Image 1: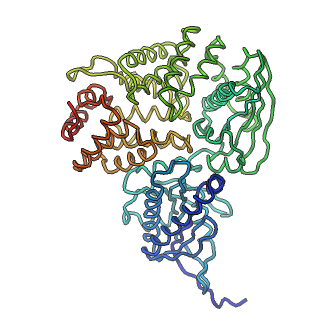
Image 2: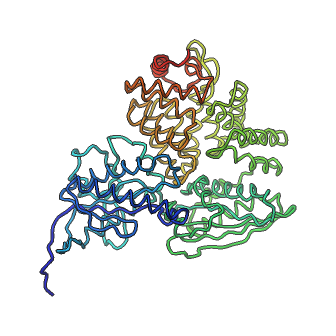
Image 3: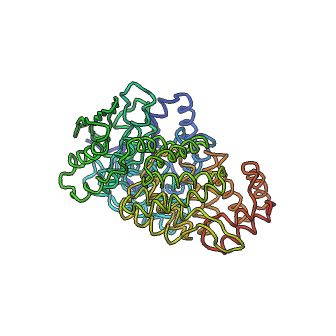
Amino acid sequence: MSDTGFRRRLVAILAADAAGYSRLMADDERETVVALDLARAAFRRRIEANQGRVVDTAGDSVLAVFETAIGAVTAGLAVQSDLDRLCGDLPEHRRLRFRIGIHLGDVIEKDDGTVYGDGVNISARLQEVAGSGGIVVSDSVQSAVRGKVKAALVDRGEQKVKHIPYPIRAFEVHEGHHITARSAASARTDPSHLEALTLAVLPFTNMSGDPEQDYFADGMVEEITTALARMRWPVIARNSSFVYKGRAVGIKQVGRELGARYVLEGSVRKSGSRVRITGQLIEAESGHHVWAERFEGALEDVFDLQDRIAESIVSAIEPNVRRAEIERVRAKPTSDLQSYELVLRALQGTMPRASKADRDKALGFIRLALERDPQYSLAKAMGAFLCTERLLFDTGDARDLKLGLRYAEEALSERTDDPTVLAYSGITLGSLGYRKLGIRVLGFRYDEAERAIDRALTLSPNLLVVQFGAGQIKSILGDGDKALEHFRQAMRISPLDPGTSGLVTSVAGAHLVAGRFEEALSAVRQALQDSPNFVLGQAVMVLALGHLGRIEEAKQAALRLLELSPRFTVSRYESHTPVKDPEYRRRNAELLRAVGLPR
C-alpha cells in the first residue's frame, strides 16, 4: 500500500470530552446544545490563538493538534477559564464542563488534516482520567512545559488505561501555582483519584407504600455508607449519590460520573415491627451483578441488618478483608429505636443547602431523641454541628453557642471510636466560642478539636464529614495548604455534592489564611454564583477584595454583606471568628473597618 498523502510528525495533541453530556441532554436538550456550541467556539478561538488546529469536533468531543506542548497547555487552561465564565450563574448540575488530556508524541497526518496513531489514543485516555473541568497531561508534556507555563503540575503517578499496553505517567495541571477554585472543584469528578474498589450507594427505594417513610430508606443508605467507610473503603458520600434520587439512570453512567467501580442499589420495606432490605451490587463498567441478597428481621434488629449488608458487600468483593475491620461497625449507636428514627429524621438538617427551617426542625428531633436516650452520642454530635451551622449562617444566638459546645463535650466524653461523632464534635469545638478584649473566655478548644479530627482521620479517612472537618480545623489553626488537601479529598469523596458552594467557600477561606488573595477571590466568586445569599461567602469576598487593594469594590461587597447580615459588626467578627492567629484577626478587623463596616 502506498504511503503517499501521509506524513509522520511530532505534535502536541489535545483531546477533550464533555463530562455528564448525556445527563445534561436528558435534562434539557435545547440548553445543552446551545452550551455545546458556545464551548466549541471557545475551544476554536483558544486553540487557533496558540498555534493549534482543530482536527475534529465529533459529538461532544474536541480533537486538536499544536506545534508546541506549551501552546496546548496554555490553550487548555484558557478554555477551562472561558468555560467557567460561560457557565455564569448556572447551578453546578447544569454546567457543561470538559475533561482535557494532552500528550506530546508522533502522529500520522493525512493530506486532509486528519491524524491517527498512538499519540491520539494516549491523549484520549488521559482525558478519561481527568476530572470534570480538569486537565491531565503526559510525562512528555510535563517535561516540555515545566517552568514555562504559569501552572502547577501535580504528579498522579502511572495510569493503566484502556488499549494502551504500557502505563502512562500522568500529571494534573492547575492554573497558577496553587489550587484554584476551578481546579479544586474539578477534583469532584476525578475517578482516578479514588481507589479501584470505590463504592457508590444509590438511594434505596421506599417500598412501604408511605411517602412519610422515605426518611427511613434514606437513613439506611446513610448507615450502610458509613459502615462501609468505617472499614476504610472508599465510598462516595451520600450527598453525591442522592442527586440520582427519583431519576432513571444507567449504572454505567453512575459509575462514570461518580468514579465508582461498584454501585449498590436496593429497597427498604418497613411494615409495623418488621423491616426487609434488599440489595444488589453491580460492577459499573460491565453491568455484572456481583452480589444480591435479601435481609429481613424485626425492627429492633435493624442495626444487625445494616452490619450484615456491609459485611456481605465486603465479602463479595474482597474475601480476605480483615475481621477486625468488620467488628468495628458492630457497636449499636443506641438501644432505643425511636431515638434512632428521630436521628434519621434529623439528617435532613445536616445536608447541604438545608434551610433554616430544616435546621430548626432537625434540632427539635435531636432534643426528642436525647429525651429518650440521654447517652446517644451521635445525636449530641449532630446537635452540636446543627448549632454550629445555625451560627455560621447567622441564624443562631448565644444559646446555640453554649448548647453546641455542651453537646460536643458530652459526645466526646462518651464515644471516641466513632469518626462521625469525632468529626462533628471537633468542628464544633474549633469553630464555636467568643473572645472579649482579646482574651479567650468561651470556646475555641483548638487542641481538643485537633485531637478529635486526627483520631477521626485515623479511623475513617474516607468519610466526607471527616475530610471536611479536617480542612476546617487546619484552616482555623492557620495551615491553609493542609486544609486545601483535605477539602480536595472531600470533593473527591463527594464528586456531585449539591453543597459545593460551602466547600468552595472553605477553599477560599483556606487561601485567605495562606495569604493567596487572588485565589481566594476566584474561589469565593464561584461559590457566590451558586449561593448568592451565603453570608460567610460574602464576608470572604469583602476580605479578599480588601487585601488586594480593591477598596471600592470591597466597599460595595460590604454593603451587600450588611444586606444579608444586618447584625454584622467588626467587633462581632473579632470576637467570633475562630482562626487562632491573633495577627490574622487584627489585620482583617482593620480592613473591615476601612471598608465602612460598623464597629
